[in-house]
Amino acid sequence: MTGGSRRTAVAAVVTAMLGLGSLPVPPAAVPGIDVLGYDVELSLERSGAFFQGRVSIRLVLQDPRPSELPLDLSGLEVEWVRIDGTDTAFRRDRGTLRIAIPPRAEVGDQLVVEILYGGSPIDGLILRDNVHGVRSAFVDNWPDRARFWLPSVDHPSDKATVRFTVHAPSAWSVVANGHMVGEPSPTKPDALGGAGDRRTWRWESGVPVSTYNMVVGASEFVIRSVGTAACGRAPATIRDDGCIDVSYWVYQADTTFAAELFARAPQMVDFFTDLIGPFPFEKLANVQSATRFGGMENASAIFYSEEAIAQGTMAEGTVSHEIAHQWFGDSVTEAEWSHLWLSEGFATYFGALFFEEADGTDDFRRRMEESRRTYVSSDDVGHPIVRAENNLMDLLNSNNYQKGGWVLHMLRGVLGDEDFFTGIQEYFGRHAGDVILTADFQRSMEGVSGLDLEWFFRQWVHEPGYPRLAISTEWLAESRELEIRIRQEQRRSWPTFRFTADVEFDLPGRSVRRSIEVRGREQAVRISLPQAPTGVTFDPDGWILKEIVGIR
Image (cartoon, rainbow, N blue to C red; front, side):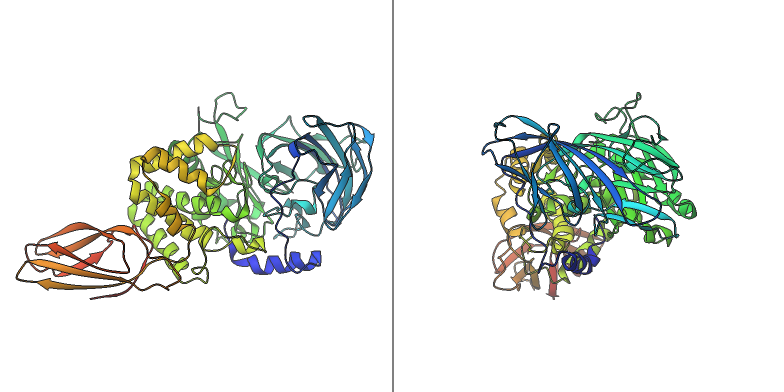
């Protein structure tokens, strides 16, 4: 996801809707319940702010067996609930739909819970005119806003497959996760919400995803394919050629800009497939939408800000960032929101890596420098990356994005390219489709490199801040050495950082480099040189997240 600058305003709006002091942090899924699949039917209208929904949830009971099923659902009416076809008692409890589980059901049993519901959603499902005044419908779930339109276990740790049946005005096209099942067809008179001039679209994702990734978009789209990608390395595809289709779904007025914006999307998919591992989903649609964020990485159906595309201000870096999320965040998913850097930090760094490959090292370094400046000038430096927030919107901060990306860059510098990228491939291969924590990533990188990286993850991920360096030099003519004195001047509550950095010395007609290891708050290192250098550059290639507060 990109565009976290609106997080405070968004949180305030949702908080006001709920009548709560802050957004509640959801539990780590529901004990005793594992959702296997959602079968969702939606009826959307051209006018009005109401919708009808029916969902069939397939789940398995686990130990400890619960006495009731608590589903997240806020602000909608529930007409009835059935379990395995039998009407079942339910009650509402402050944002939770509590459903009685039949006493006969035992651990290991699969149940099918069917719910008929609807109303005017206060969030999650956005029913309004788009930026060009055309009525549209878009789902926008992150982080736990699926509850406003879909009864669900609204937590990233419980992944499930999803099937959508969407009845919508005939002028609309409907996009969703996964692959389209059949062709759009006239809506039957006995369908949910009645008939009329409507068509029915069906989409299905056989790859389990978290609820925040389950989306539908419906509007008057122009749909264009920009090519195929991941050929032979897309195990979920249903295409005969073994490729995925890469497309964009945008409004008629914005097709010219979209053609330019998404032109390299197939190249991005191929780059990440080669670098990380097989493409995890059935297709990749890039969708102009009503998302509140600059971009939202919904699995196989990325949503982008309709305003930014209409105004021609959407950056290609957002496209690369959101496509990288298909691997990190959508396939390999943080089990707890406090580990969001495993999604956003990875998308930030790998999104930039595409431009290192495609446009050169200078472009990549410029992007990394922008990230560094954003982080060190933020209010987030006093907190570690992994940190629980009462308001989940506050997780959209420079720790999880910019610092998270820099952590990966510095780890690449510690391990070298071969071990780093081999470790990334091992990590993705081991955890594709799973939910993970930071310790899982650390274990993968230690396993490949053979190094103990506890010190690295402790200082960069689990503690706050970054090194602020005062550097001075003195030429010692008698011994022909340059003494470099380094003092870490960051706050005392921050750690003393350990890192290795190159130092470049300008000599007549050439330059030389030496590596030095920094461990203490103050240290001095002597470097033998043939003569006094005319210039000294600390960390010339920018491998360390730092701020140099003085050099002489």
